[in-house]
Length: 244
Ligand code: BJW
Image (cartoon, rainbow, N blue to C red; front, side, top):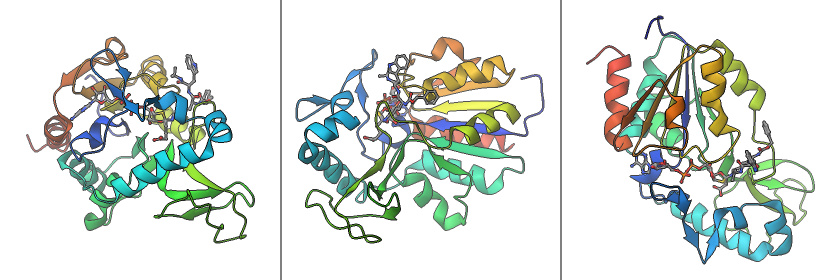
């Protein structure tokens, strides 16, 4: 890398939470589908699917919301929380994940501020009536009332296919200022996140991929390191913090 690194943007995907026991969305080297009750995620995670069969979609999210609350951050989440606590330059961790493992890894260090959930959060419910998002840990299948307005219009606060991911302006602004873009545990199958590497390359930003296997975007990166996140991420964090 030619330039001094000061500003870092990190993109994380389902692979960083895999060793915590949270299933990834796509299985295998070719990014083939993982199935849930015979449904591909693309067939459940859409506004059309929710309109067609809300019980099915609520069941899918109720199961996953309950499951993540039994999981723990792994060494990859902990390493990024340490980077957040110690990195003197600017840092933005953009996660596609809707679990809260980055936050929980950062909590003991008091640092989970430089994190953005572009695909929403399992532990929030969004009222389609009053448009307010509320913390949510229980199920939504029974159509509980919104704690703010009382309407029975709550949906999971996640970004489905065809919907606009959150805080895109903040993400592109951080990419424009970045010296380094790092992608961790994502297949590069879902846009706009899959396009960040190309945006970064066009902006002259150095790009690094940390993933279990080659992804759909690997050829775009300046460097790819293969391995499990619990090993390659702490190694890279040690390196960038000058501890190797
Ligand atoms: C490990 C590991 C270990 C495993 N260690 N690694 C045609 C072309 C281009 C775009 C489109 C198109 N047709 C439609 C679109 C747009 C569409 C899209 O991308 N569709 C694709 C199917 C092609 N995108 C959208 O609709 C998005 N909105 C949008 O585009 O709005 C317009 C817009 C335009 C321009 C700017 C801005 C906006 C919305 C996408 C919403 C995605 N939502 C989901 C569900 C969230 C809620 C939920 O959780 O249910 O988000 S889908 C699902 O995929 C989830 C994930 O965040 C996302 C990405 O998955 P991820 O994280 O990459 O997981 P996997 O499973 O795919 O990969 C895991 C990786 O980890 C693998 O590589 C493994 O090898 C690795 N791994 N173990 C390290 N131990």
